[in-house]
Image (cartoon, rainbow, N blue to C red; front, top):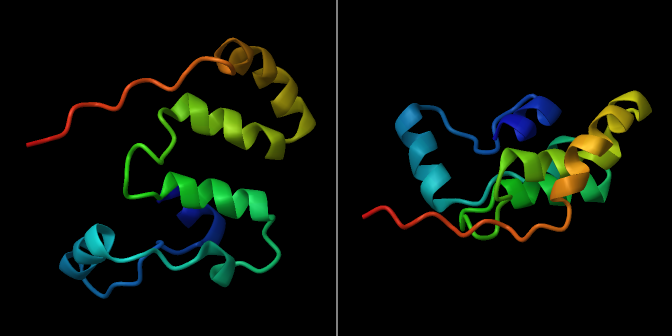
Length: 102
């Protein structure tokens, strides 16, 4: 939600109250990012959509994983400084999903 809000200036769900927002987060699809910002690269839209997936097995497994996915969109100095940081993790399997909350 934070990345979506940073890019669009809005939350991914339109709601007039906190209870309405909670219901939408639990049951509704987010407003498509592409409808809020024209001309955003499809790869960025796909990355944000993956981060917003309700099913945690479909989302990024960690902040490091989303950082690696964002790396191609970073400026060259940022990319150069982080390439070495993310290199050891590129080929690692995703961690197992945490146990379900009962």
